[in-house]
Length: 382
Image (cartoon, rainbow, N blue to C red; front, side, top):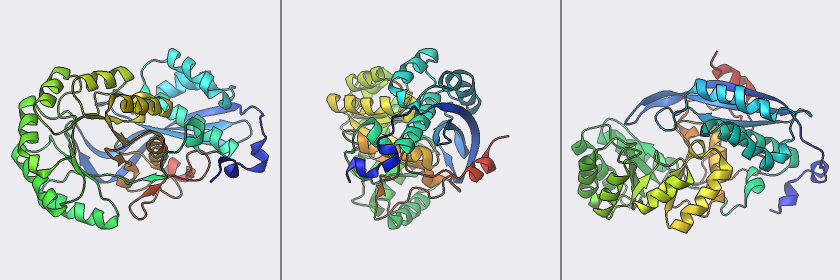
């Protein structure tokens, strides 16, 4: 579809400033369908931040970021304070259309805090897209694909449960699976890899330890699961164990991915030099979609594979942003994790659907999802 065809006639020639009059930082607790156990935490409800930006003309944009104390250091209270006390005062009264000029000043005023920066940028771009009639992806790049095949995470107590869930999700349209490891005895996790592979002989399969293995355990896992044909093993070691990554990568043909260790372009370069086969790009780690798209381009230059992921668990707001990112980067060959699928209830009127194995890039302006403000109030943390 021609980009201009998406622009409303009244908006197509509009060049009036899009003045920001209000920014709200809203903490929410979104319940999961089932608890998700990882190496360092078990999540039963997602403690997220929503950012609501309202323009002088009444137009509204939304952003979201998950708290991630074990990944970014961001707590929910810290995210709220970062937006409310530092970023919002710098934006009220400013023209949202000037985001390329506003963004650097915000990062100078508040270093790190990737989740807060990401949520604010997401909301500004959603607002701008809605005001102009353009999709978010058209504001920051160009679409390289029209949708993605999402990945499903498996982390049950037994192999039988993982196999049953994988088969059920495959029938529902998922055809890419990630095993959560580093939480059970190693021998059991190795057995689960083979059980799932036997049940799904041709389906892409990978594993993610979330920093949960020692170097010896990681070596044992990748060696003993060779015949399970894992596409990659993600973050087996501590996020800062670069020397361990070098040793592990040198000793195995199974590609090693880095997730918790990626927070900057420099981290991507360091991981590539250490022998990583690919990285996971998350908006909350890199500070927003602008930086994440550039990170995707850097990965292509370095020959790294790319996984795009939202944190467990974000609503269709963040999943939509991750989807725009996944469709804008040069490649996302290590899969895409859209985590709104794990929520018991979403906060948009029509959650992003999976149809015929694909989650399609929304055609609506901005993020392309409509937030249900009544649902936001229902899950707001008082």
